Length: 141
Image (spheres, rainbow, N blue to C red):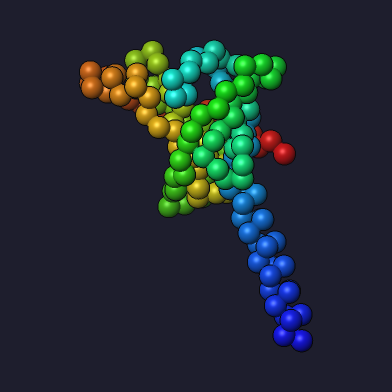
């Protein structure tokens, strides 16, 4: 009886961990109406998919609608005190430049955040004001 309980506990724990990993995986798609920068790569306006390569891992694959020129970029986990109400991409606008800053999924308190690029850091040193720009996104299944 003890071994059956141990097996059931192990199976339940594995299922719970799988559900948590799936919930943290980034898989969103958005129409971005302006050129933007992620890391050191400039992207034109268009339809993009952003996906974690592994579970909730730090590597995000950025792919345009045609599936051409996919690129990978590093991200880090970020948290909010309340779950995001919508799935969205958050950009920092500095002058004419827009930098992808965060990805949030509706219902989650956890998101992904991108490191500040060299260009963004230089603009900040020149006292360029920054404002947040939000683009609606949708989950990819």
